[in-house]
Image 1: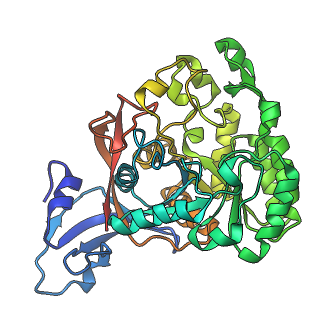
Image 2 (image 1 turned 60 degrees about the horizontal axis):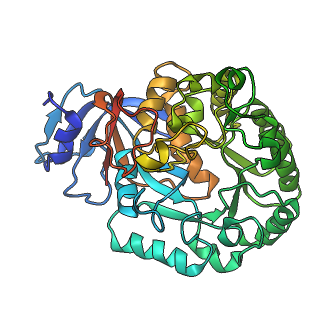
Length: 426
């Protein structure tokens, strides 16, 4: 059976299925191989059973799909993304965020705490927990705030929130190094990950892109790479002194990769991630003044981009995060400098990175899959999710509002035809 939209055909077919010659990626076993896959959702309603055909009962007569070109692998884990709800439901609800995540193959999304109200108390976390229980297949976990209101000033009662969260972050830079020291000391017995964004806003100033030749050419205010690297060096030294899992988010510089590599070689207990759009664009791409490329931190140089990819390949950078940040049309349709920073990405990250990194042989398929699934799970000490993704890497589709599940459409790929569609089997 072939022809038409194969993922739609598989999704709506209630019968047992035999998918011939599927590329199976197992990020835990380090396997990337082609095999036949038998799927029977009637017998495995909650886990899309990807079983070897040898296990198929003789009396099962599956529909057979030949030469599909499909890829099968574990569901993904997003280390950090923003929910509009509570507070900004017009940007994104928890329901729309869940649908967008599952459409992109994500089985777990770790929500940042800077909602309104912020996730800095048990009542706010209970709201999210209740939403997960009320809705089926809501793939959410929560980061608890480090400080009240995520303002970087007064630390919350971390022990009180610990059982409800994957870890703690403010999702913003914390300039008070004394607070970070106290935080790390307090967290030691709790055995939770703390996620820090190493960024010095005093050095960054009002910059909206990386300072350098392209900021001068485009007439945009620049922030230097040292806004990251100065803060990163200080954060690493703090982490060196405590036995706490520290995750460094939003790494964007080549020098940052070097600092992390040195620290890991010294045995410092850190992991690191990069936001996915940092792997796709660099500062010279901002000549279009597309406000959807106004990001935090700003896009780096081409050298930075290539160093981040190399860091993923060597394991210095552990994971790729989506950092899904929804904004409405009116909020983003401003000048580049005036528009808020951030872009959506849950539905786009696998198709785009497959074409940019796997097809162009900068990362292997297994390395990309690990950076989106098993490695982010390890960063927060979580098991890899059970749902399975089917990916059609050659399926074309147009990135337009009616195709996107997110309520917001702030992406630099809007209006473009791209390759690659995901079907998540629960």
